[in-house]
Image (tube, rainbow, N blue to C red; front, side):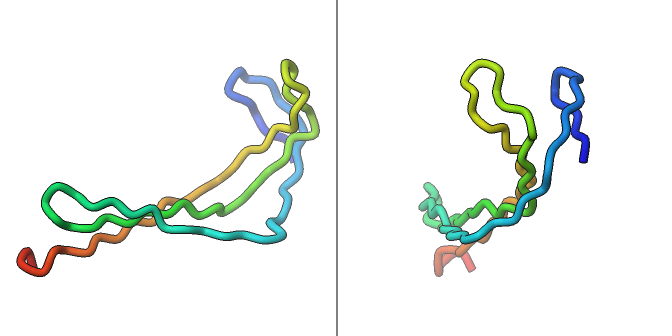
Length: 77
């Protein structure tokens, strides 16, 4: 596949699959006593055939989705 970088250059890339994943929830207790939980889900990962020109590291492009849940404090329900 061909992708366009932010600077307008076009490079070839390949979608790769995830071999193993562990997705944890980040938990935040808010000032009002409610609990907000968030997690990032990887939907797709693409590896560019080119490498970063400065570091020589591989270039990965990710497509992600954010999940969020709220647990309300008992007296707020």
